[in-house]
Image (cartoon, rainbow, N blue to C red):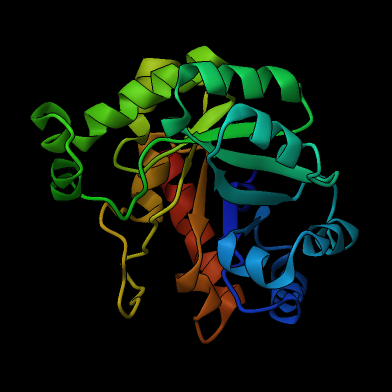
Length: 241
């Protein structure tokens, strides 16, 4: 894989037209396009069919962090269109539910478990009632959940680039690690809500298989140039492993 094939662009835009414009502009610069809640709520499931028609097979990522009882999730996931490469479910489901869902889905797409949102800090964990050993060290909680997800049969996890290396050490090189919360040093994101961020270089050096980048590319004066710059930083990180 080339570094750019490991780059996922977050399509966190207002509507289908904006999304497809970005797809057309950046289809040769990134490996996958991510659909999250903002775009999905605006356009609905039909958007997934539109993307499947406009992209190569398995070139987009449905990131809805699904979280409900197993029976409800199984019914919802069976309606996902062909062409989705990755989907996310939440580790908070627990090992039993994760195992049920993964077993039922087979190999239709890769299932990634969300360990801990990159917007959550140790202070947040303390307020949520987590034990000090996790509130003071969120990485320890991430590794605990990653091992649980792997045991349940998930193909990988979503985690901060700060924890990518620890997850690889605990779960092995074949277990996928996808890292959001990526901020190149040259990017400025107004009102940034991310807490545990790293650069593309750091994430790849630490062991990430894919990184998710949104605003630093989408809002750049030249998104193509920004995507290429991110890919160059990723290449340097891969070389430094």
